[in-house]
Amino acid sequence: MSHNGQPPRFAPTAQDIEALALEALARLPAPFTDHLHNVVLFVEEFADAQTLKDMEIDDPFGLTGLYTGRPVGQEAQTGDAPPTVHLFRRPLLDEWVETGVPLDALITHVVVHEIGHHFGLSDLDMHVLEDMVAP
Image (cartoon, rainbow, N blue to C red; front, top):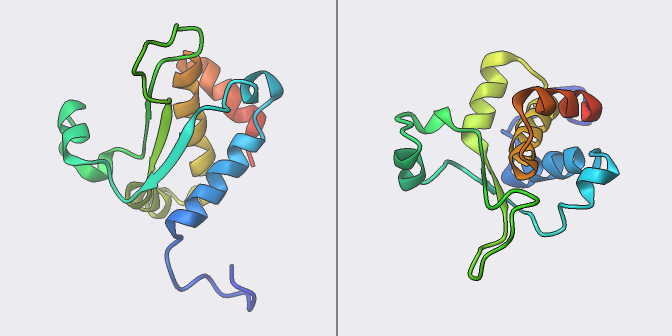
């Protein structure tokens, strides 16, 4: 909401999405945050065409987030890029509008899911972690 109680006139920016994602990461408990120092967060408008093709996703609005990298516990290899979490702004905003889920809760959901891949968590474990860090 803006300072006058009216809804914002512009869609949240990539910086707004990043701030919400960083807030969600900050709410993770210490055993998790201890292993996030090398994870890089990116906020982009959409996934690139090659990523969508590789994942067999036809609609660029069909991917809200992506984790790439080796999960914790897997030995790093020479030449490995740092693990990354990509958030895709436009698909996130569409889902936000379509579902009515508060944006901070949606961003938390996607961030926890992608970070869950970093830790090799099951879907059930990801839901438990998400409940722990819900805004």
